[in-house]
Image 1 (spheres, helix red, strand yellow):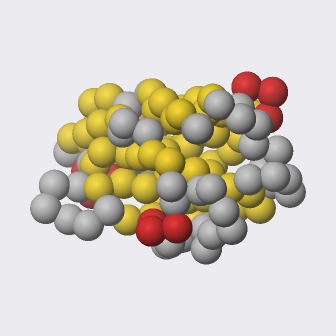
Image 2 (image 1 turned 180 degrees about the vertical axis):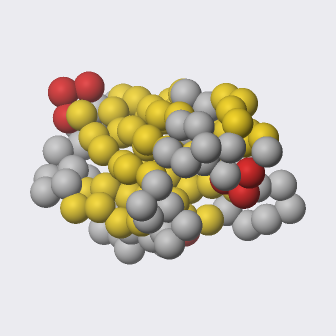
Length: 124
């Protein structure tokens, strides 16, 4: 069993930065993939960023490129999402996700484990 706990969300102004954290427990993740997704009210959940632990390969949504950075700390079993230059359209609940098998990193339905989500609100 894998447990994921997100933290770091909050209310910020446009242009500000936040760093989200996702702490994993129940197993090690030395050769695994973890990802961030987000869901705004009335919209479908969408991919934001993913990272492969063994070689630190990363993937980003077009909306995140150049502004967001995903990283990992193997010793802490934690994945981070640093978000810079935040925009009102970034407002959403952000979820951490992990699979139990090989996945296409950007495909939501490939992930088996999800955190509770953390709210990010960006005001104008």
